[in-house]
Amino acid sequence: MAALPLVDDGLATGSTMRAAIAALRQTKPKRIVVAVPVAAARTCEELAEEVDELVCYHTPDPFYSVGFWYEDFSQTGDEEIREMLELEKV
Image (cartoon, rainbow, N blue to C red; front, side, top):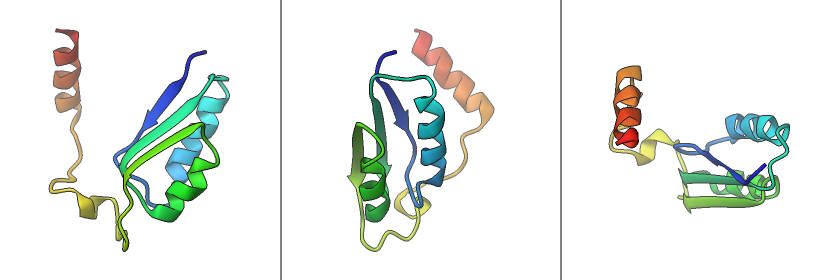
């Protein structure tokens, strides 16, 4: 299996990403790459040891929370996702 990327809006504790990594490992990918725009520095350091490549764009100190670093951190609705997926088909 090819390299598989895991992308999230940010990492605080990393627990959700660790669960995703564990699930993905069961498919035996060649590489696992994790990419996030913002994360706690310590979480990035720890996760870097669990994957082949980790991209953390911004590791602010103090971190506060993932949502703190977004202008709009509201949930994306199902209809908006459907619209985005339809645009990808074009």
